[in-house]
Amino acid sequence: MMIHNLILGSSHARYDYYESPFSVNFGFGSQDLYYSHQLYLKLNNLIPRLKNVILFFSAFSPGNCLLRNPNRRRCLLYKHFLDIPYKNNLYAMELGLAELRVDKDLVREAHVLIQSLNPAYPDLRKEEQIDINNSSIEEEVSKILKLNRKKTELPHLKALCRDSIAHGRNLYLVLSPYHKDLKSLLPPSDILFEDAFCLSKQLGTPVINLYDYEGLHEEHFHDRDHLNITGAQVAANYIDSHLE
Image (cartoon, rainbow, N blue to C red; front, side, top):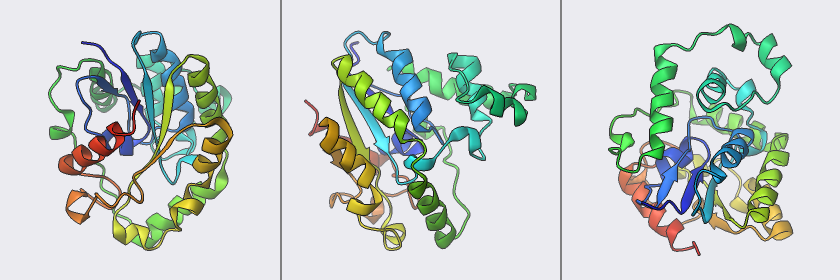
């Protein structure tokens, strides 16, 4: 079976896109732009018919660094199972990542991620449990906006854009959707996702705006910032309609 579409990004990519048989989803919880870029470089030559790279760009993406994230242990997953180096080896050593063991939970997460290469594998979302954010909506908005303003990770996005263009791939930036309760406290899309729009103007990278998509309703959300399976199917149909 030929794979034409590669999906990358955080848990938004994982749960907000119901992939077709021609797609492979390497989105994973807390995945930052560095790892999205490294995964692309790793997989580009392994998927000979690759045509479209679909990157879910979340509101927190500009400043989200997995190595500085509470879920930093997942850096071990990329290093040990996918041979992707730490973004900053010295800092990783200071954090003690080298001393952490690859436990059964990490093996399970690696199994979920690597099984993405098998299109015949059963729908993983039926088995996975999304990490529910137990913080208040105000706390969640504060965290999102703090990372949104940092901009430290944008060079990795620009590198991904340039590499995909050089390889003849079509890169699409998908603006992740959020529940109306969360959106009510967040800026409008032209401010929240100004980096994506700016890059689109500079390099011609198409933007697919799920954040403002009126086809997604309250019943399509699993929680404040993840879609359920029905919502993921709606989102996938909308995204696929924009692909070349």
